[in-house]
Length: 306
Length: 251
Image 1: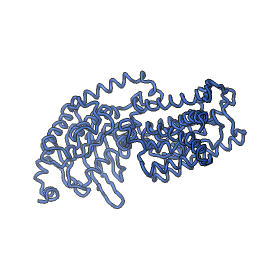
Image 2: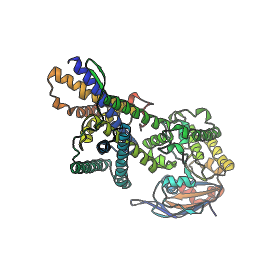
Image 3: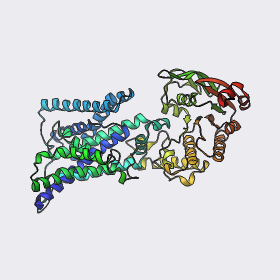
Image 4: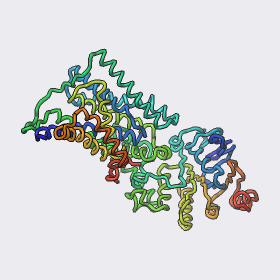
């Protein structure tokens, strides 16, 4: 594989991996605290991307404003799906399968609301129009201002989330819920309030991920859904319970999809069309061989373990 | 007026009636024993009072308020706190974190304050000092930074009691506080429990199998059998009660 291709693919790995990490952490948090593998998470990403797109089309090109709008819309989408679907279902003591299926349904509803809106206002496949500039060029290594927004923002948010979880009273309560939610109720932790806050956080971060995603590719109602398997693969690598494991998992998935895939293509003629199979292969391989993912390596790090 | 009054409490699990028409009262400042053979409905009764299980019928009056049907966290904030047979702690958290979790209305639990430690650090410090004070009382102070899973069985029980104290309870429900603890330590635990009443004015309802220890500390005893209240009286009366002896000891 020529070095130029390798460099480009590694830049992609870092950029996409950071976004995967941001999305996968939300899935891990939802699974640990709310006990829900939430497939609608993908569509909070799309909803956030559309919020960002609409703000940018209105002429505001400040990335911070754009991301704030995406955060708010993603957070609201998550809170509404909790209050109107997941919480009533939990109150009826339904099985995990029912919850998973209902999360698919919630995702579909959000996705097709976005389709209707995009159709009406003709908002298909537009990029969030942050002006593109090349910040750094050295041989084949090209870094745009997009890279400078996406990577540090994702990493900062990931760090902020980890600190929030491990160093604040709110995070302490979320960890408690992840650990034993019955006990949380019995010792007087305001479980419902903590859950609402967790949903706002999870949805908001998904929305920001959508905004960042839409800055580098194009916004369409399927964008979140297209990434959901890769993101779940990352979360499963993290054992659905470890933050560090999930972040590592996100980069592993991105690396396999970009660098490894290109390597296979270039050296063994494997068609690039097989790329979507990679997350499937990772998920199956991990679940067959190490269902706990990376968690074993982070005994004290992954505090969401049960 | 009694602190706690149960009238005609009933709990069905499918076809099984675990608690059948139980009425009893707990006066303020008393230590009350609740005994009975395994499966007699004692733990279910505790669950019903704490709001951990939904009532089928009956009323729970606490401190003049009807608290029947309230969820467990609301019952907790009314001042009824329960302990468990098996130590129920956050084992992956430190002793101090276990005590800070139940503190009500912390500023740092609000999402707009949480990311700004300066807005809640002083308050957290106050709570931590209160926690340290409680830890000193139960002689766990040196272990404040230990993971709860690294404590001994007896220390876990003490931590549970400490956690209950953090909630400033009026009524403490203890389910076999000495289960799985060596006899010598069991007596120590009961001495600690008695001090909760003497020093803090906390009322106690205790489920216990070790009658020889329990009877040294209680003011009054209720006996359950097959979901019903079989007898009640002072420790001496219960020890001499013919039916209780038959059911309980197989005499």
